[in-house]
Image (tube, rainbow, N blue to C red; front, side, top):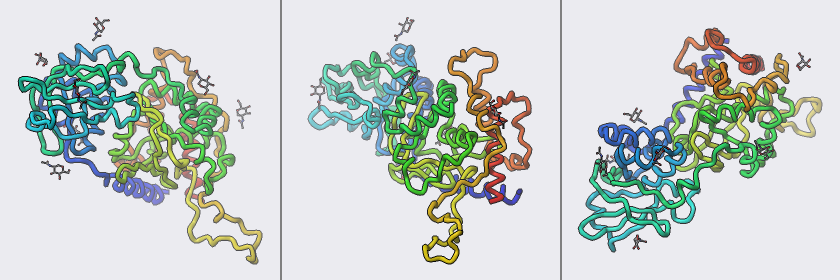
Amino acid sequence: MCATMDTLRIIIVTLALMAAVSTVAGHNITDILSEYPEYSVFNSYLSQTKLADEINSRQTITVLVFNNSVLAKFLSNDTLSVVKIVLSIHVLLDYFDMQKLKTIGGGTVITTTLYQTTGNAIGSTGFVNITDLNGGKVGFGSAAPGSKLDSLFIKSVKQIPYNISVVEIDLPIIPLGILTGGAPSGVNISSLLETAGCKTFAKLITDTGVLKIYETVSTKGLTVFAPSDAAFKAGGLPNLNKLTNAELVSMLLFHACSNYIPRGSLKTEKNPIHTLATTTAGKFELTVQTNGDSVTLVSGVDSSRVESTALDSVPLSIFKIQNVLLPTELFTKSPPSVPAPAPETSTPSAPTPASAPRTIASSPAPVNATSPVRSPPSPSTPPTAPTPPTPSISSPIDAPAPAENPAADTGKSNAGDGIKVPGLFVALVTASISGIISSIAA
Ligand SMILES: *[C@@H]1O[C@H](CO)[C@@H](O)[C@H](O)[C@H]1NC(C)=O
Ligand SMILES: *[C@@H]1O[C@H](CO)[C@@H](O)[C@H](O)[C@H]1NC(C)=O
Ligand SMILES: *[C@@H]1O[C@H](CO)[C@@H](O)[C@H](O)[C@H]1NC(C)=O
Ligand SMILES: *[C@@H]1O[C@H](CO)[C@@H](O)[C@H](O)[C@H]1NC(C)=O
Ligand SMILES: *[C@@H]1O[C@H](CO)[C@@H](O)[C@H](O)[C@H]1NC(C)=O
Ligand SMILES: *[C@@H]1O[C@H](CO)[C@@H](O)[C@H](O)[C@H]1NC(C)=O
Ligand SMILES: *[C@@H]1O[C@H](CO)[C@@H](O)[C@H](O)[C@H]1NC(C)=O
């Protein structure tokens, strides 16, 4: 048992190291701005919206900053998702230092912003117009028709040629319609998934009640990795009907985590991602591999490329992915030594594992299969309820992974110590433990 746990730990560490080999530019915007207290709110918003990860992962970039009092005046009443849109318009995908700004060819240039890369920019709101105004002034404005060049260059804050330049302007660039357009509040996750081409997944999470857990968690931060409809039709996918309800719930919880992780942050994620199915023992984790612009999630049994972003609206992030993610706790790879069954073989009664490269590992869990489905908290529960469900779900998720905490695999789970554990969690722990036990036995 201990040896197996050690093996699992080695696998997890190995995957974590593999994931760490993603390319990042050598700058850290959080660090750069931390030297300037006048931009501290701007800096804090870059971290909260995860734009900092996006900036750090790109080379040749210019960040237009404004000071705390300007930010308070223009953005204090806006939601984080609106702030994210506005700030992403201030991240230019080109290098502009003072010299380059003062010698703009033709006196005017249109440049692409980070907002344009989200695919949500309407018209030319994702572009910024930089124009050399009379008297040596440089003006910035949205490239959207009808916009004014209201924002003026103040000073160059920091330059690392030609990687990153930080430039102060006196007013934020806010394209017409951005603030009034607003961000979707109260997103209907299932209808969004259906529109994105993930109907099967939407039906599964609705039928099992997992959607209600997603919805509860989503108020504080949620990322969903939703397999496409094609993923459920792919050859080699184990028969999911053979899973017990509890196992199916675990598998669906494995496709989400209780943090807001937009694409840029996912690309630079070095640590295993704790999913909603992750227990105090650290099981049911995903790792990320990045190759250029392609992002792949690794489950341990299989992997899945991230196909597209279905939604990025702080604190909710939904990705469409290419394959169903199979957790090692529920599935195993078929042993490579098993020969493919030949029709002329003398043992026609032998099982035919080779026809399904991945097989369900566990026997039915000793859990009342329907109990986890009925347990999830009702979405109508007021957030001020004395025992809000979210902390109970997220507290085991915040626990350290076994890779960093050797004490965690001694078999002593501290899930019950001082934490009010809901029935759902107990059921899931039981389900995952039985999954681990049967995969060891297999
Ligand atoms: C710019 O980034 C590249 C790649 O990270 C790095 O090799 C180079 O040293 C950086 N330039 C400066 C001036 O830091
Ligand atoms: C960037 O700098 C901040 C503050 O110095 C630090 O907390 C953070 O870990 C750094 N991020 C990376 C990716 O190194
Ligand atoms: C924010 O809301 C307060 C109170 O409603 C209002 O006085 C203030 O003008 C608003 N600020 C902005 C930038 O809209
Ligand atoms: C930038 O805006 C100014 C003022 O609206 C306009 O005259 C100029 O043509 C724009 N530049 C480009 C490249 O479109
Ligand atoms: C913030 O920036 C504005 C615009 O440049 C300026 O008028 C104001 O004095 C600055 N405030 C502080 C505290 O630096
Ligand atoms: C969300 O959309 C689905 C259809 O995709 C619908 O059945 C459901 O009632 C909607 N939920 C809410 C709360 O509007
Ligand atoms: C599981 O729960 C259901 C609903 O409460 C109940 O009807 C059923 O008898 C239970 N099954 C077992 C095996 O305990």
